[in-house]
Image (cartoon, rainbow, N blue to C red; front, side, top):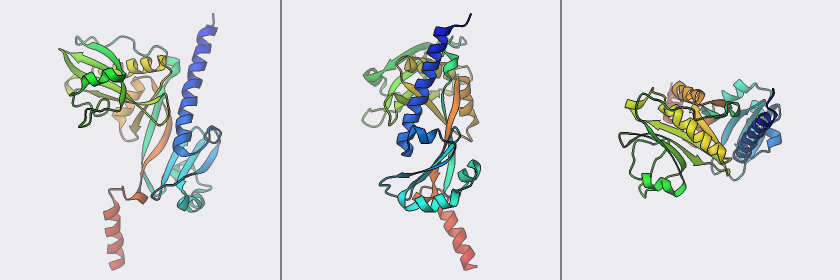
Length: 265
């Protein structure tokens, strides 16, 4: 017998996740959801960019190139009629990040926790997180600044012998109800399924509250990508990390020196 009710809930959940992520990408890339769902290359402008700006996104069948106004026509001319890979390889950008979302089809995220140790699990949200002030070693999930503030809005923690040994935290993005997830596990407790259970538990808690979590990993960080896979997350979009145009590249001086040496020679 087909579970019509369950199937309908799954469809709604998948649609909710997709719509919220598209809202986030539309805001970050100054485009519409309709443009994100196009096939081919879309060009947009980031208004009032203080420095030369370029960021590239691959989403579905769309490649979106967002630039500052001063670069728009030149970058468009340079990348028109180029394939997705060719556009991502232009020498003005560097680094690529894969962003993952929960696979709604997996349903029950938490499951059973690891049994190798006597872990205690706890979900904490909102102001109650301030009770965790003073914890260190959780830079990806629960970092506090010098004034004991943290961007983390929800956290799923693991304790062993009354000591916090792992945390999966979520922080708000620029769009309401879309939060980015990070996870940390103490070295002596890794490879035991703790990180996976934490992220899956946090994911379940957030989705229950209609909050869409997403997880990000560098294309070179295979370990982080495996965490996403084990946690029931699937890749959903890819974008560039940085640009050589704003002076943030660590290779600026090297490039200048090479150019100088070539001209001097």
